[in-house]
Length: 144
Image (cartoon, rainbow, N blue to C red; front, side):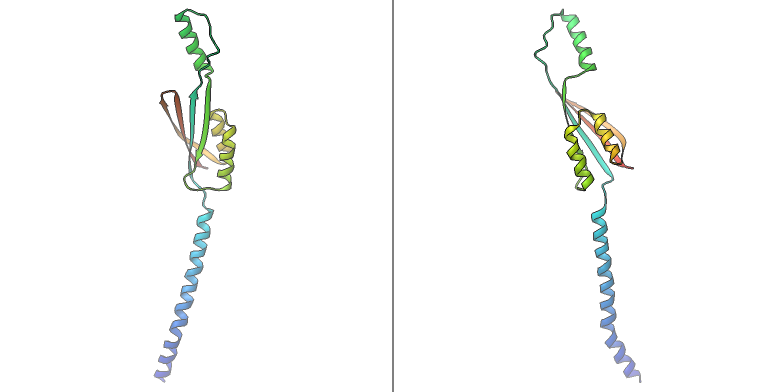
């Protein structure tokens, strides 16, 4: 009698181990499906602003007046060209792609932040680096 039970147990062992492997296989498939659905949680908006010199404006002012007046005008309404990019790391989703496509139409950094807010991002912090004629804006965002 004991021999029959032993033989049955030995015969059942391969079936038990196969059923365990199948259940783990299903779990790994779920994990890989979930990992593709993950959204990026952090983003950096990078804006590079270049000053455009306007050689057409030639005003006849004294040297002192010219430097003060032009300095005020440059601060109030600078002649610049801005290019904006959104950096999500290696995560590319449809939302991220459409945000990048809309970056071509942005004219200033507040527009870039407002556009990111529309897509569910929240402003955290910013850094500005001045490099010769270029001003580089880094805006750090996180998903709400």
